[in-house]
Image (cartoon, rainbow, N blue to C red):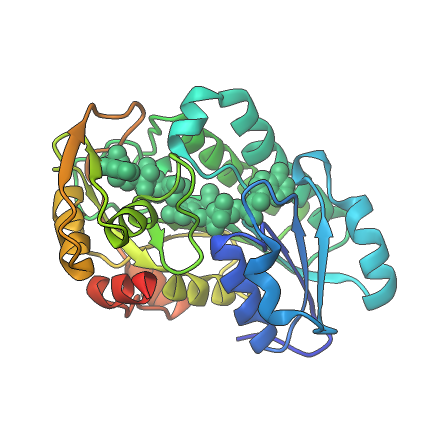
Length: 316
Ligand code: NAD
Ligand code: UD1
């Protein structure tokens, strides 16, 4: 892992779920960290454990309006930005279907602003949070990175467009990047309060209170749920040197149906929640399981956390 006490790493979306765990890991690895976040879903409380740290700056900034001005006072004090982990995004597939223009401005526009900064300031490495949503409906499992990409939601389209932009900035401007296609990430600090929140955070929140869990569709759709700690190890590896232009899945290589997930969460909570079904949501993919060979061979990361252990940590 490349790190030094003088290296400045920027984490866009660093007050969010995955972002705040990434900040924890980068600080622990010796980086100076600057978080850029507009707090639309992120929370200062996610970073409260670092209150008083002289190696963390938190700057309010909407990345879809550019990041040059926000970073100027930070670089004046601490020197140039060496690395950027770009996580700031609108994360809900369903919200992107309802409002594709906002999704484009934040998810594609935000990435362009980050890449423009990286080009102008010769940033050494950009790691980008892409998504399994770029694949769309794939029948061949596990999903390989070289399969055709046919996203079925604006969210997936804008993540794919961002990947293309990374590739362009690499080939034309020499910006070094790695894109990680996260599958379904879960763990502590994932916010359950929106109807657009990740399914595990919603199920955990409801099952803890003994409330009914709602499954959209018959529950036979599958997802590859990967624990946030494993995702962060991949991000820290990706933002280090090497692996330029790599696009790699981040998952466990196994899948579970949403129905089985609901039953497991209900059982772990022991509050006797019932399960109901509602109509299928638009823009949904049906099956999802990552091929994880590149993650292991290029980034040296194997997702180690078993679902039941990760669920226990999340419920705790
Ligand atoms: P999150 O909502 O907790 O984090 C997103 C963060 O970005 C929040 O802190 C939010 O306030 C911030 N943000 C949003 N728009 C912004 C803007 N315009 N300017 C500045 N900050 C902004 O979600 P997360 O699950 O931690 O997602 C992090 C990244 O990982 C996103 O890029 C998401 O698309 C990607 N991803 C997540 C999953 C998953 O399962 N959670 C899967 C695939 C990809
Ligand atoms: C999730 C991520 C997205 C990421 C993608 C990668 C969130 C909010 N979305 O999308 O950012 O790019 O994985 O694969 O983190 N479900 C229910 N009941 C509920 C909530 C959800 O049955 O109360 C179902 C959904 O219909 C879906 C599955 O659970 O079939 C997962 O849904 P969700 O957690 O929203 O994630 P994705 O849409 O897969």
